[in-house]
Image (cartoon, rainbow, N blue to C red; front, side):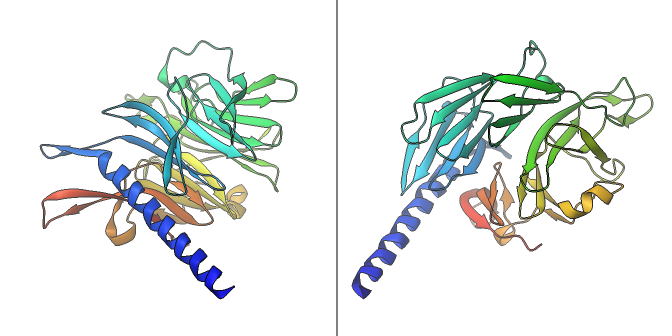
Length: 314
């Protein structure tokens, strides 16, 4: 029994080292330097039960989607750009331009497809940006079109455009969404689309809190004279709402949000392991931030890119 445990541990360590080696190589290949400019591929991660999903767009090879499992990389067939991806149970949900495709996790065979809107999308700010799947419902943060709720059982859809606290000539886009399974709350993050140069005002940037029937409970704006959001993506982990904005991650305790007058983070994460910078949309699970990071190496005069897991102090 002791020999078996030792062999199992050795195999686990070997597989982990191999996986990190492959991921390090993937991250390094995703950057290139032209002159003094660092050019990065668009990379996103999602942590599944037994695999790590990667998707995005490469400057060299175009759109990609797949996963790492047991030290190997696998591809998922897709003709369209993957905007968001979630694994729920034995299914994979893939968000593209105006569709959520549902795949069998084991066979990767398509099981169903759901349209996200009836509106013709002719502006970038109308595009869907993020999904959340709870039971038989798919919630879609659909840019300036608001939020779509898809009932997979009846194949029906509800589209909700919230009234936001800004002037009528302004426009904001829902870019992030997270659902609290226990508290009957849906969190929707908004970025501003419009800016009034005459009055020097921006459209709403902040958070809308709704119930699971999409009745608005509260809208909280950021302090726009102090900071800005950029197409925020949301993750809800253990009572903490993580908002990713480019290379920054803001952290908000959900228990304080209903009383908050302004959306002000408890933590701002911008410097990670060994003062590295986040260079991908990370996946956040059980308090760990996983993704591609980069750091300038003065000894070689070049940028290093690598995969890492970072545990923030909250």
